[in-house]
Length: 92
Image 1 (cartoon, helix red, strand yellow):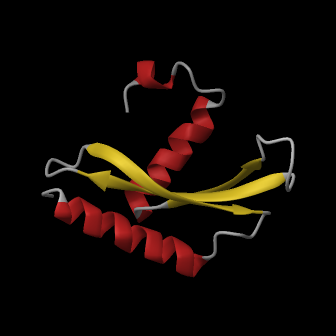
Image 2 (cartoon, rainbow, N blue to C red):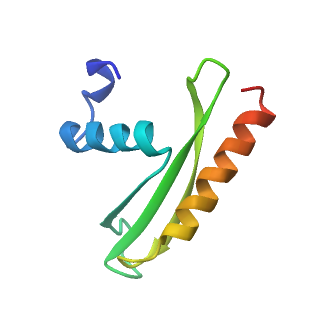
């Protein structure tokens, strides 16, 4: 990832770690404060990239669940499988 792409990140080191996880495992998960005023204090999220034939990111699929333990291993696995299927469908 180019350093100028990280210039707007609040925590560039954390973003680099998440990107490294996606590259190694094909999916990453994290828990973050809920940006909405209502609902739970934190949200769990997982994301998996949709890649083109060259391996460049076209987009991503993500799951968001309330609370700290919302995105379980089975959901991350299903998310990764779905992102691979979409990648294949767009010509990977």
